[in-house]
Length: 215
Image 1 (tube, rainbow, N blue to C red):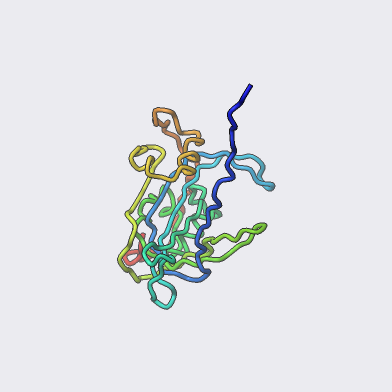
Image 2 (cartoon, helix red, strand yellow):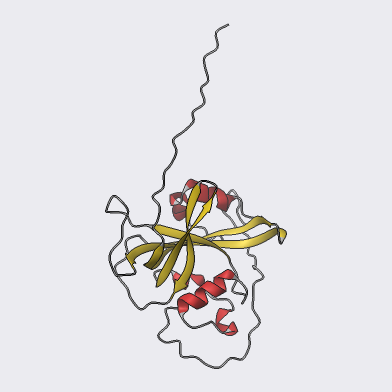
């Protein structure tokens, strides 16, 4: 009996252009709410946490020179995943305090609408980290800036609570898969209304002039 060969492909190795380490003028252009995800760490074990991914386009280097990828057309972009929490100890709260330039009061942080970050500019530090034979570009520090230039990418926001399927279908496949793994996702894209339990107790604070702050 003759059996037709079934051949497995090694596939192509995707090479991603490395973002040079440094400080950049950046604009937050994408925010993707990936819902409640199962996570594991040696310190905390298994947990369920609500997560969001923020993405920035890198527009100028620290000397004010426009930056682009090797093709001279596309700009670099970098992302960071956060637990959706404005608790004082959360990474999101710490980064937004630094980005804003003035720390949030507890009253301001409580129930903060993170979509206010879309379209906002910051100084962003990219650092490299190496795992095995791979080097990754990571967001290290966000800093306040008053400088603004024209952005390149369209502003994109996706909420797991009110999913826009046109936006969802335009996301990369790996990100669609991640969203589908969330507790909130259903086949018909209907989501339950849930609280992430990250409310912060309000406290009386000295009033601060926030009129010139980005958010």
